Amino acid sequence: MDATLQYLLDLLDLERIEQDIFRGASHPSVIPRVFGGQVAAQALVAACRTVEPDRLPHSLHSYFLRGGDPGAPIVYTVDRIRDGRSFATRRVVAVQHGQPIFHLSASFQLPEDGLEHQEPMPPAPDPETLPDGEEVLRRYADRFAHPAVADLLLEARRAVDLRYVAEPPFATPGRRREPRSQVWFRTNGKLDGDRDDPMLHICLATYVSDMTLLDSVLLAHGRGGWSVGDVVGASLDHAMWFHRPFRADEWLLYDTDSPTSGGGRGLARGRIFTRDGQLAVSVIQEGVVRVPREESA
Image (cartoon, rainbow, N blue to C red; front, top):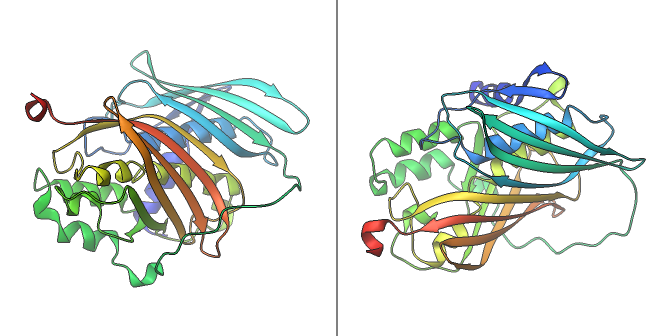
């Protein structure tokens, strides 16, 4: 297994410090706050640790309350809201330095059969035909606000093979495009043995889901993002619905778009498809999207 993937798996393997109380470490951040996908994934791991293993998450709804400190552990407290015959509900609060930084509610369900339909998978080139994330970051390193940003971004994403279908926002600052983005992703290594757990695949997809979701907002306005320095941004809330089984170590298409932005906020929607066209996950997020003060003055 790739060492960086092992590091990510260790990051998601929370320490139990008391019943329904867990502690997690943080990945060194490119910006002075914890990556939102990490907090969401760890909070979901904490919730999963308190339900029967035959119940899988079918949805989560969360709010980012404060920027997390990458240099301090995060404590996750789980409330067992309800355990029904088919569904279970958990509430998780993430705390640092005595203050809540993140709040998550998750619902779990016993698998069952039901009516089936879905939107078709949009067209996308095969992931093997696309450059890997390292090649793309190196190609546009001179666009970043600081020379070290490309290296830091690469380090943060190295556990995941993430491939852009079209040029990412940081490649074309100043050029407005359709507010839609696509990436293929999978973990950099197979999950087998005791790591091959459906809940872990779901938590890994939760981790990745916050990486490129707001790109579609940036594309609509020709903004390159915080790494270029023409936007100040942060995730505000994050919701996911898990529809069908999938594997995070096999190619998944993340298709996102933005229906609107305004008031210093942007809304983005995402759909995650398996390679054979199954709609596995739906995602919605609103984030802060502001121009720098000197530009808006």
